[in-house]
Image 1 (tube, rainbow, N blue to C red):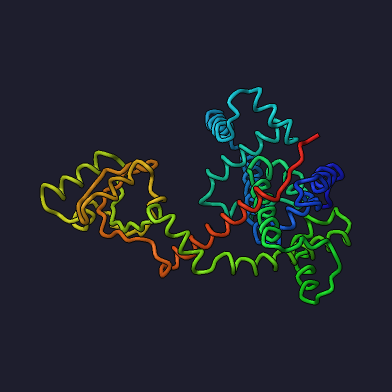
Image 2: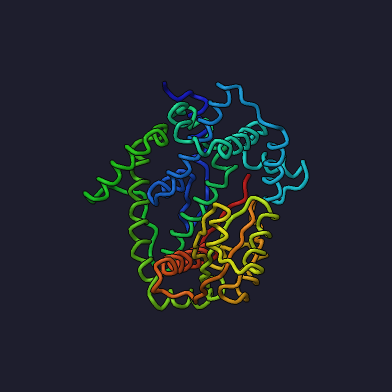
Length: 364
């Protein structure tokens, strides 16, 4: 089935809107989208939208209703995450981004349904696959309300700004003068054809080529931004937050059961493994960064003696009983630390460059 004129017009009009400038070069939202496609970020958004639309189709087919309380909670969380406290502020935000109230509510309901059916998601997507027309009709509202489009813009603008800050130039949309670039353009154009089909082919191919050149330039720059010396500075600055805590733990459904387990260890001298066997549960060993641990538990995990049982540690709808069996400072010899430091170094560089070089004009 072809794409309707209305949905084509909505998405096409959005693609052609101004996003940001660097120097005297203006970038449109189509450049941001293409940048996300080239950088490998677009597929997660497409999957998210595909799942949401499939869940909506299942709900309609099965006449599945949602409790208004659950939708209201999602709406409240959305508003407070964005400091949109009053209804007037919410309406002003929707008007400013060009999303209707109905589109916003549809986005919220898709999110609730995705969480509700996450365990069955592959089957839901197979049975209720969204058409290209449905994807494109919902793309603008989903991209804006989910924050994905803003994230794509920050990521792309940051990469371009970092190139400029390092003395590089922004390559203009140009010819496919490299066989490798042309091959990549052909591949991306096929892969994302249903998102790009409404645009002039020659213009889109030139923008794809420019984005690929930018990606090549940033890849080269990344090697300099993530040298050993740069990564050591990052690790030193994050030494506390990236402290690695190794924990043995048992998870219980109730606080009472968790406290009984602690008594068995402290009063009866049982080990965590003994308690787990009696409770028909497993001891799980995890290695986590301190910053990944809920704030209210960090001090206890840092100060407790190794091997000493502690808890109950409340997390979501469970209660953990555990013992810290190791603590270590972050080191670049640890692949997880090295990768985290690399991401942080690039993020710091692109954020700093964006503050200095990216301009966003006020909306008319």
